[in-house]
Length: 285
Image 1 (tube, helix red, strand yellow):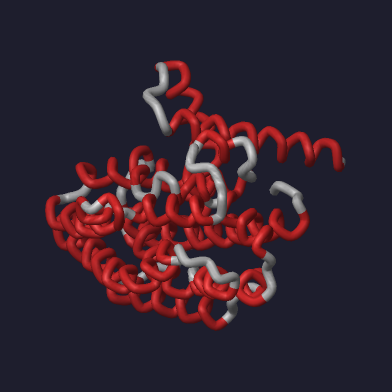
Image 2: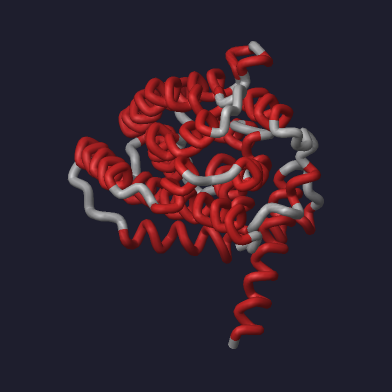
């Protein structure tokens, strides 16, 4: 039984690594077929389960209220791992966590760009305003991916994305592959709208432990974390506006929006736990 579970975990890690690499280039027809099949078996199946479990919202206002309640509940119940990161993690442990998220930080927001032409005009513009901020509004020094490079440079870590792929666990890779799927291949952009509305607001408490750890450890280039704590208040408002615009322009399937919320909540939580576990134990999950 143990061997079978380990084999399944190894296969899942290999699939996530292959998905990540294929998401970074133009796949062949055969490779694209493999991607679709792998995503259907993984994230497509999970998305369908989350849709089936979604409440029957009477209105978009009811969904927005439920989203606020979910954020409040998560903020009131921060995992012990986040407290450890904020208050106790050593510099080497912090570097290990930063390394696990380098596959995201070094390419931040690039996976999201394909969603814009899939959205009605006003919804697409609201999302694009967020992406412009993520990309530094044309100022390379302020792009979030550059802020991550600044952090890595101070920590004496590589800036080459390829140096991190094989050392990142399945949960960390899934975190990035999720957004590629949401933006480009999910059968409806409503999943993306729910996912990103959740994510932008969750950063306001989810990054607190990272920011506290960076400051406690005397890291000067902590702006990657502290900038998110500032700008994502604006981004969360923009994403709620994007959902409203989509509903007015196209009529939102609220179950799919909510599935994007809950699916992303689960995958982000798993990625955080896996990264901190790796930092403390050296065990890739």
